[in-house]
Amino acid sequence: MDNKMTKKKAKGKDTKKPEDKNVKKQTEETQEDDLQSQLEEAQQSAKDNWDKVLRAQAEMENLKRRNAKDLENAHKFALDGFVKALLEVKDSLSMGLKIANEEKATIEHIIEGLEMTDKVFLSTLEKFGVEMISPTNQTFNPEFHEAVTMVPMPDKESNSVLEVVQTGFTLNGRLVRPAMVVVVQ
View: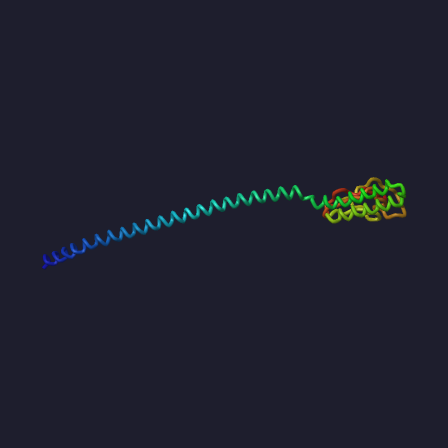
């Protein structure tokens, strides 16, 4: 019986082998096709991603160029509004000079024109954040005032501003020029 069983086992193995080879071959071909399609998909994905990277780089370069041009224009024309506002002051001065040169001009008319021009000039400066420092009768502040001289005055408060020799100015709260003052000792 052992002999018969070994023959049957051998027969069983022989019948399975050709089928196993075909199945194995088909499986290998299927796996190869799958791998080939996965490779193609990966290559296509890599190509798409590379295109996206190139487009993003090109967009960044364009954005850099646009920003550089905008910045250059901002620097070039930043004072455009300020210059237009100063032209009003220039017009006021020109008008005052024209009136001052007329035969019937009086000193009162000239003074009135100068006061109006000064008013226009100060309002123009204020539009752009420039404020005048005129600290008469205020306490001396070394951050915004520069003492030209000190005068002893017993009837006035010590360390107070007696007179403003030259007004000071700030731009948006930052000192541009200190006020030159006479201080009580």
